Amino acid sequence: MENKENKSSLFLIGFSGSGKSSVGKKLAKALNCTFIDTDRIIEDKEGKTIDEIITQNGENEFRKIESNVLSEIDFSNKNIVATGGGVPTIDKNLRIMKNKGEIIWLEVSVDSIFERLFKSNEIRPLLGSNVKRENIINLFNSRLNVYNIADTKIDTNEKDINQIVKEITKIYG
Image 1 (spheres, helix red, strand yellow):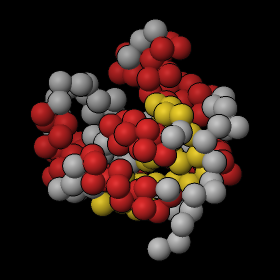
Image 2 (image 1 turned 90 degrees about the horizontal axis):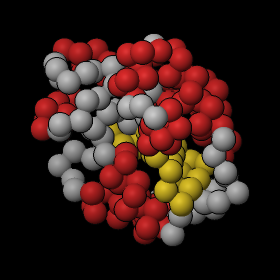
Image 3 (image 1 turned 90 degrees about the vertical axis):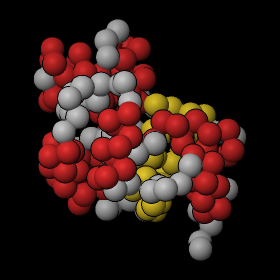
């Protein structure tokens, strides 16, 4: 497989619960990069959870904030960027990611998503605390075409974080 180590940043995309933040932290350590979690930056800047922002201001306003955070990243460093699940649904965000690095889709099955989110105490934006399979399937299907633009697709089903990080470092390390 082609070695892609010369790109400045790696953007992790994928559905809620795909492991972007968990994988991103370990991957940043493995590749000696800066780790950036766009959702955490937004929550810190706004002083609210993502769910509160969407509930109070609407999804469109949240997407604007998300795009601003992405465009303000210091790309002079080599970064691992864990994006919110909907980041690649905005054309401006896709352009930034394509121009500044490589996009890695952490692919996960609907069954795995449901299992991970059901076990989690965290309220997931656009899904809420009452995780329903039908909601996951609808949102997942609406994003498949967008996720398919990734430069690299990593199947995360039945793999632990270390296995996923190892697979990515073989390509980008």
